[in-house]
Amino acid sequence: MSAEQNIRNRVEINRHPETDRASSLAWVTLLFGGLCWVAVPLVGAVAAVMCGLAERRKIAEGTSSPKGRTMVRVGMILATIQLIVAGLLVIGIALLGVFSLIGAIVA
Image (cartoon, rainbow, N blue to C red):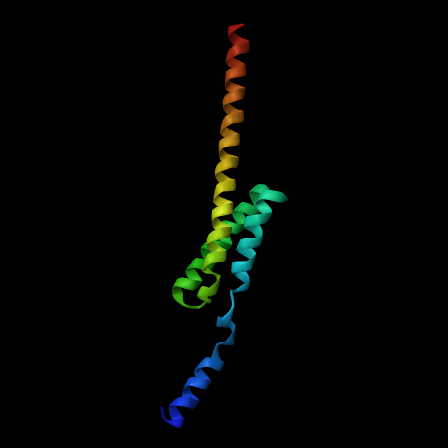
């Protein structure tokens, strides 16, 4: 390897030092994915999914570091499960209300 190629490689490595770690959007996705189970169920889940989709797009375009791919995946899985559980809970409460209304009409 010539000295000129060595210098080019060093410049290329130093041009993007932020690619060595996950982006802040990946951390936000993971944070909201965890918070949706503890503090803010629906808001946290929706925020995690939105941030996760944006970060996945940025990773696919190459504008964000691929180091955060696993964090985004975990945050989005947690948020998706939370949204499914919340949806099933709403459906269950609605069905309970309908059946209790039917029971009151019949009785």
